[in-house]
Image (cartoon, rainbow, N blue to C red; front, side):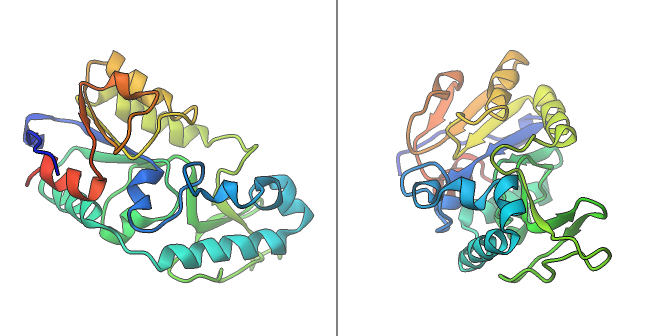
Length: 237
């Protein structure tokens, strides 16, 4: 790994780590749009939109059970574990993630906002959201109260984002004095606007990503290493 100058997080009051698929890719979790991403193998119109769910809910749930099983076969990496230790040692470190895989929580990381939901929750249009964790198969495919099909609590293609979750994330970003982007291309809107918002608010801008992307020019510090190595090296305890 190339030498990098460590950053003492204690000099910042409010830190936001904004993370994407690259954070989990090292664990073996496939990305969605990147090289080898699952949407190069599957058509989202068959598996990841409300229309597909209404047409064939069992087929959609079968697909998501395969995704859950594949994620459970992966383990958090050293970057996840180090971040959990940082949060335990210092207040004011918040995680805003586009990831739905729950890898942070398995490592003990406190997540402030899951922008696109979680594959470890389900929801009923009538009775709301409930946890469904720790196993590949869903505990319930239909609501125990009304027998309606339960859909994963994920922002699918063609869905509207959860406005309350995005508003909370935007408030955290606006108040951050250090903004760290990890493993995200900055290409998916509206989440892609957070880096611009952080820069406008005067935050110090740090990017951890093995490759340049269209948002890299926003960052004064750019670390071209994998998150598992970069997070512990850049932010020592």
